[in-house]
Image (cartoon, rainbow, N blue to C red):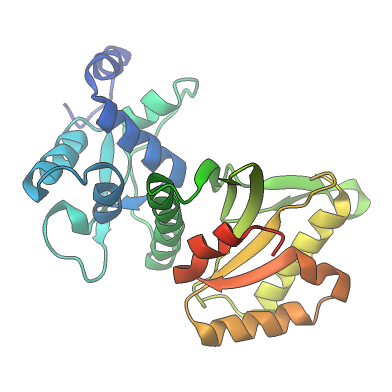
Length: 260
C-alpha cells in the first residue's frame, strides 16, 4: 500500500480481507496504544513459528494497519519481537471510523515508551491469566479512556488520569481497579500529589458507593517502601483506597480481590 493517503476504498478493502487474528492484533494495539512485537506474539501468535509471526506483523505494517516506532525494546534484537508497534493510519481508520483526522506514527521519548509498554505488559499478563482460567478480564481501559473528570474548587473541572482502569471478574465477584504504573521516575512529592488527587476524586462521590481500589505498581521492594511511606502520611481513613505491589505481583494481587 502507498505510504501516502489511505483512501476510504482502501480501508473498505482491508476491512473485507483482514483476518480475525489480525483484527484482534489491531484491537489490542488500539486498546493499549503501543505494544512490543514480543507482547503481540505472546498474546496472538503463540501457535505459529517465529518466521510466520514476523511475516504477520510485517504484512500488517506494509498494509499500514500497524506502524513501527523508531525505538526498539531494550535487550531484544532479533526480528519483529524487538520492534514497538502502534496503529498506523489504516488501523486507526478501521478502529475509529467516526473520526475525520488520523495521523502517522511519530517518534516518542524513551520514558513515555517504557511507561506505555509497562501498561501493555499488564494487559498481556491479565489476558494470559484469563486464558489459563484464573480470572476474566471484563474491561481494560488505558489512557486516555481511563481518565475521569470531576468538579474541582470553584466549580472547575479536574481530570484524574490513571494509567489504566481494569475490571476483573473472579467467580461471581467483579473488582474495579485504577492502576498507576510507577517506574520510580517520578519524585515522591509528585506521587503524593497524585494520591491526594485520588482522595479528592473519592470524596467527589463520582464512583458511587463502591470506589475502585487504586493499585500502585512498582519495580522493586525499595520503591514499595517509599510509596507506602508516602501513602501512610495521608489521613488514616484514606488508606483503604490504596495498595502497592510490584509489577511481577500485579496479576496475583488482583486475584486476591480489591477488598483484601
